[in-house]
Image (cartoon, rainbow, N blue to C red; front, side, top):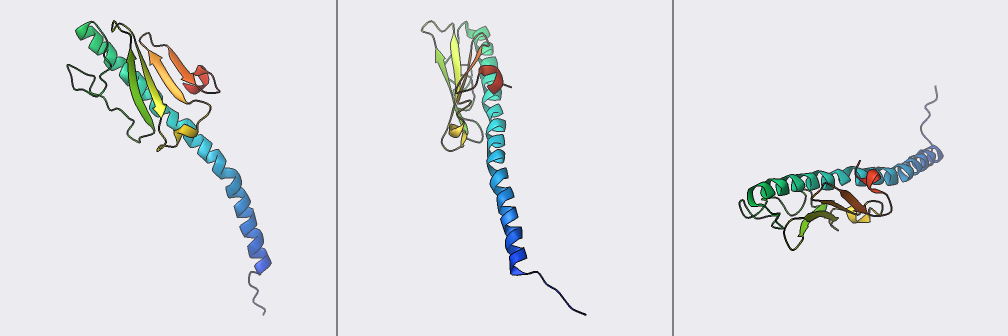
Amino acid sequence: MRIRGVTLLEMLVVLLVVGVIVGLALPSYRQYLVRVNRSEATIALYAIAAAEERFFMRHGRYTDNLTGAAPLGLGLAPASSSSRYRFSVALASDGQTFIASAKPTRRGGQDSDGECLVFSMDHRGRRAVSGSRDTAFCWR
C-alpha cells in the first residue's frame, strides 16, 4: 500500500486559483460596500428635512443650526454614526429655504465614490447629487 500526499505543484496551483478568485472578488465587494453606504447619506438627509419642517412649523423659518438643542437648533449629529458623511445646512438670507448636504469624509472611504459624491436635498424635497451618475441612480 502506497501513501500519496499533496505535491508542491498541486499546492501552488490551488494558491494561484484562490489568488485569482480573491483578486476578482475584492474590487466588486468594495464597490458593493460603497453603494450600500450611500444609504447613510440619503437617510440622514430625509431626517434633516423632517427636522427642518418641524422647526419651520414652530418658528416660521428654517435654521442652519444642525447640532443645537431645541428650540434653537435641530438637535442632530453633524456626521453619520460611522463618520462616512458630514452634514450641513445652507439657508437663504430670509430663512425661508434651505439646502441640506451630505459630503463624504476621507475617514469613511466614501470619498472614492466618483459616481455619487455629494448628496443634497432642498426645502421642497428636491434631491440632487454631484458625480458621474444621475440623481435617480444615486438615491435608489
